[in-house]
Image 1 (tube, rainbow, N blue to C red):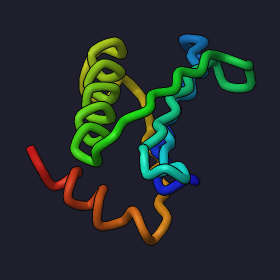
Image 2: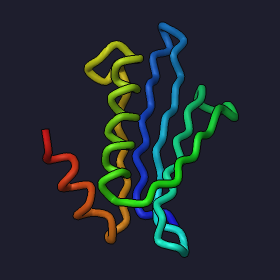
Image 3: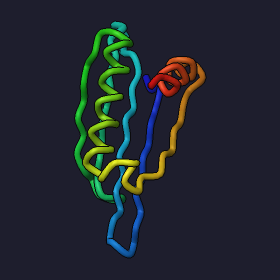
Image 4: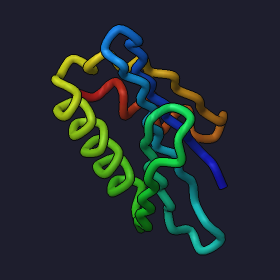
Length: 102
């Protein structure tokens, strides 16, 4: 089911910041997209939100909005988050086109 995964981490021991944030997703058996958003303190259980979307364009919009919200809440300019992005081959073209857009 997992077609893409975006993982962000912020570590700043001097400020006691240990955050993890990830967005994963893929298509289910019916062709709908399932996007899972999870965030927590590193090592903690945290929170999980799931969205079911019909179109790939809706997935792009949802992921873009999640990343913009994360950036705004962390003070902009990634707020100390280090991006770890993992792809499966099938989703590479999808996210390459998304990251190249302004």
